[in-house]
Image (cartoon, rainbow, N blue to C red; front, side, top):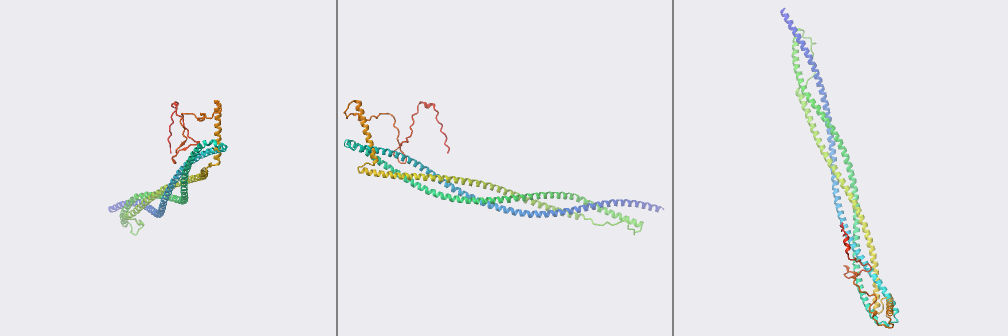
Length: 536
């Protein structure tokens, strides 16, 4: 009985311990189910991450291909840009050549304009001298007409005027000397005019040469303008391609930014998974320990059950299915995931570096294209300005040519007048050599002059006779001095000048310079003028 009681007590204790063990086993089973669910969730997340990683790798490959395509496009654009720069340098050199030619032609034009101004001045001086000579010839023509008229009236009283013939002969010699001096002046003027004509012919040849060169340069400039328009079109096409490249680069930058955000999200999820994986390993170890304890307890319960009941009762327990991965396999999988993540990070860094290089190159190309556009615009403005200047210069040259033709016509007219005057002079010399008057007009003028002198002398004689009352006396001293002779102390006025070309005095004629009076005491009340600066 005591043994039965002890066995019953042991049995009760065993039953209580079995109940406690079963309760603990049920708790561990619930915990195991939770851990299995957590492991399944982690496996699903792992699959999702693997799919995302494969998608990211595929996108990475796509972006690499697009980057290669863009790099090839950038290389093509750099080659085109280099070609455009080389062509631009060639055009700048050609522009410098055209500029030097234009400066040379401008210097030639300035030299020709200066020579033309000198010719104008010389022609003006010659015109003034011709006007003076013309006035003198008119005066001499009048004198000759008067002399001829007086000679015709005094033919009957020629015997009484023999004494005055010597005086007339002396006057004639003086006039002949004056004619000889005028002949010398005419010869000097002829030599000067011939020299001017030769100079004009030389300038005309130079002008025709310069016009031919100007036409050639104009044709070359038109060709260069056509080439410049073609270059403008090419630069516009390159600008449009650059804009399209910029748009594509911006879209790729947006894609890279979105990929960076996705990569950050993947890294965050991976960090969370890393933080959770060590806890899962501890739980697995705890589960293994609990399984060992559970096996021990089951063995105890089985032994107890076999002792209490029949061993064929198998409804008291069931075997669990499935396998749990080891810690080593989990660590291996984690290492594989970390290696793949490091590869993705390195590839992403390389892509970022390539993108930075591409952006710097595109920015340089943009700046270079903008600078080239500004330079081409400036060159176009300068070319237009030079074209307008060339047109102005051609207009001025045409005006100077018209002036030269006008001066040439006047010079030819003067040459004709000179030839006619020379013919008249030769005829006058021949008539004088044969004892005749130089011309009929000179004879008539001399006759009128002598008649006027006789009338004047008769009037003076009658006036003297009437004033003195001495009729019949003809030998008085009243005819010794003229009645208009007046003694004066005034300073004589200059009536001639000495030009630098000839070196002999020439009369002013009717255009004598004004001789101002001497300044008096009232000049102290007048403020002296301030000389203005001459700006060239």
